[in-house]
Length: 379
Image (cartoon, rainbow, N blue to C red; front, side, top):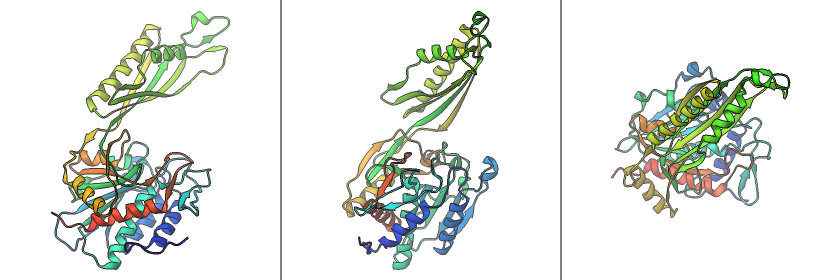
């Protein structure tokens, strides 16, 4: 198989870089080795590099990595962002390149294309621009920590450092050319139900069954697709010590997503009320906590950030697909801080599973798109 250059990209370097970065362990909150490598790369490319101290907030290994490269053409700077962490199982990953161009893991771990495919696209685009001497916009990059556990890195980042008003977040599944212009609010719900323990054989009437409270409450909930914009799920239940003991405690965890923030909040509050009232009804108590992982947004389809992406894809003869997504990303936090961004597909498939894969051609396509976005003159 040949990896010879095409469209001024170094395909062999791109694929080798992908395989090398896959081999670096970077589970959420443990991205130190990845951050050090990326900081060195950015410095070599001429960036002013800064690592923040959000690690102190999360007691993690490192902070977010930010870089700024002064442009050689006029125009506002533009931000490109990816996350450094990977979901479990993420230790001892290895990329295997097949003869047909497919790249996958050995089946015992995730591949890490989420989000290493985005990282290598940015790096190779920058190297290609530097080596060819092409004029480019002022470029900002943000490599975040702990995106997978509800965007913790980007949530704590100090955005006063960012100069860009528009962003491209390389963190979406689907064919390259796909754009997510709308994303949901996500709430998690944690329910701690307290009953009363008793012997299940000799004195069951003296107990208050916390699992029974949970079951009755869950039976009252509308789960799955609540409406066209909203979903609700109970994903985890823990409780009980033995079959002969009336359980005095039960933990329930769930999630609510909606493209409409008010609907997500209303659904979360409704579920909280149902658990609380059911516990009271059956003689127990209930403590419910809600956590908002991200807030919904929608970018207008005629916004410049989308029109510019379409223009680049048209020039590269790549079909564009505008979609809504039920997945959150760092872009949710960018919109909260006045940065209008879109999330673009970057060659990741079957993510969050050991069947995750990418392909050489998709990595080349997203790298070409990224490069063209960096050098496209401002209208």
